[in-house]
Length: 189
Image (cartoon, one colour):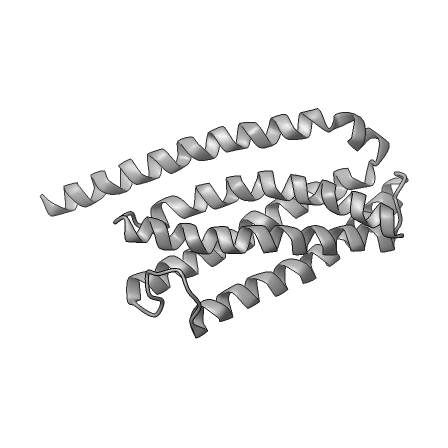
């Protein structure tokens, strides 16, 4: 009977997070649709966007999974604050996000070149990746940390809910950060 209760708890928690994920995915899609004119003017961002979105969700999702595990085994206290393991997770996630975002910018320029699509340039695309990766990490990393701790404190298993929620929030935040990064880089370079 306890196994049935545990399965039912997982289904309840996962269903709610998936509904939130679907709703957030719709918001991210609407946000992208509203940017079609902009994307047509800067086609090289089309090649940066998919990798950038996948990157955000992968890194933040992996970090929230590690936090969920650390909360379950007790290496991180379920309270908002910094400890060595949490700092290691935050630092690794932010570093990885920035480095891979720069690489995504380089690959985007390479793809544009190979497909004869107008690029804003390798330096600008790498800077857009760098700034966008940094901005989204600054926003998503604390969100994922606080959310994992809060859901754990309320008796919800972070492993059941954080993946769909963080990838959805990550999509919306990443689109906005990539757009902001483009405007920032255009103002600098």
